[in-house]
Image: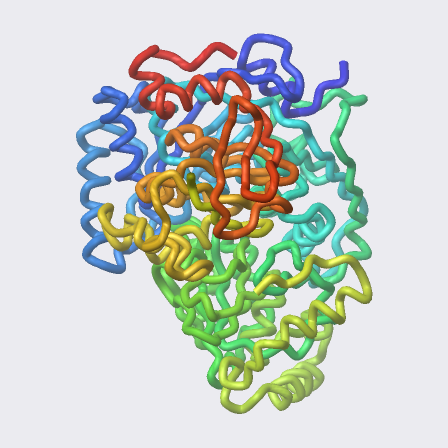
Length: 455
Length: 163
């Protein structure tokens, strides 16, 4: 047999032997619905003539994308959502402040390995962290899945990503997945399933980072192979046929930075050193867990963020929030000057929390840096790991975090003083020429292929 | 006759309707008036029913927001023709009844503002200066489109088209 993991899963759930390219109609084990689509989902159900969802025990509903409500219009929509959940008697409902849907779906065990899950958010690929085939869909697809308990899919081709070696200090799986995005590009996995090998034993959070970011390559699903949650049948055939195979050696990775406005415009941190920032966002389904906050606190504990730099920390769920309170991580981050937001999507998608002003430059640990993503279309977003984020908050510029993690206190202070000295006194936005990203990309183009900036 | 609106590669749904203008943020009756407000100011006012969007690779990438397609639907966009589509955007188009049709050469042949005629049956998108070739849709998608979208199809037939 030569079946990929996607073919193994979709053959099993559809009850017939299917291969890439086949259309299948499959049962779903869960449907995930989030706040921003509820009006369209309800309209879809109404237009279908269905009063009830097919199985209330298999529906998970979240208020996270613009939560707590930032405006009266959003508040009204949340009210409508809550009424719908009550009417439908859906027991699994997480209101504002409980966290990002994807984090809760995985950490609370709603993702059955080897099953198909339809989610209303594009990062529903995250459920591949525990071996589920999670696919993001639009509101009408979600309404149909809620009504029928089934969805249609084209069986995807798969891309195999094989990780070898071990990460060095100061490097994270965020750097690893950004290296993969750099390799594959924003549409290199279009309609495909990305299957990750060699990292099944990583902590669940790292696996969410990997699976969730397959969305940024256009993937239909992203699944980690050989996780502890996976039953024995849930593995690809040894001689599976892949569309493409990518091998990443973890021990030679450098910290990676995505340069605005493309998430596949990724460079080694050395190319971006000295880039000033105004605001740092640590959070999202990609990097808002305890370990991410702990990594930031390792850099920031006992220190203050740079003058005129804001740091916003948004834990990805209440569980992660409370763990970070209990072990003193949030205390350390708050003492360093961080704004701590309630668990949820935060400013990742520019609807609530610290949205960006025109000309402002952000270093974010999230997953998208499109124009306008976090607020003003004239803001810029760099993406990096929690370590890179913490150092950017501390110094006001992008820098390689590794020397800080190795430094003595005196060396550390000297590093910080040097970088702060390089930062324009009035902040990144005021000094922005608009050409800095272009310079970065041109510099990086000499060392490797990077997509051209298009704005 | 319809007007062609030509866009490039990797046009993401944040460009179609920025998150800050989601129906969720501005109301169901207004969000479509912000279509392409940053990427192509004036689009929402000037677009006419039946107009066709032409794009390059990976059209509609990014967020799963169906309201990006709903905005196009509300504005009466007749079809989207692109070199390739992002998967969620493609599904959303078919589900809401907008033909999303692949064409390898439309992006080269069609100029912005051209008068165009889409003839799916003949596999052509005609312009005053030549025709681009368009790929026929799979019968599954065609059946849904013919009904006017997946909701209408399911209401009529009670289940998905046969695969």
